[in-house]
Amino acid sequence: MAVHDGTRGDGDGNGNGRGWLPVRIAGIADNRPARIYLAVCAALVLWVVLDATVVPHEDASMAVVWPVAATAPTSLLALAVPLPDGPVGAVLLLGLVSLAAVVNAGVFSAVLRRFRARAAHA
Image (cartoon, rainbow, N blue to C red; front, side, top):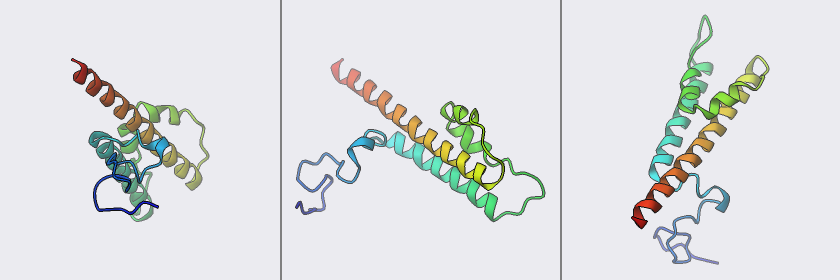
């Protein structure tokens, strides 16, 4: 069993920094822009949830537009899925928007890795 020595890494001394992430999702948030994007999307989803549960509205709130716009174009595919009305549909929509944010962050990471690899070879 590896003991964590306080350095970055997975505790075995190799310092790869991926010890706390499962290997399958390590490529999604392996750089700062992807992490910032995921944090912004999470904040927007949290804002929508708080807006829907805490703030009384006479009419429908348009707060969900912001997370959908932030996760476009992937979230636009989620809008094509027919969702039920009511709270179940809202939870499903926010789940699909969250999944779209993860997919977009993975694309950001892949593009950034490609650019860094080209810059290293040039």
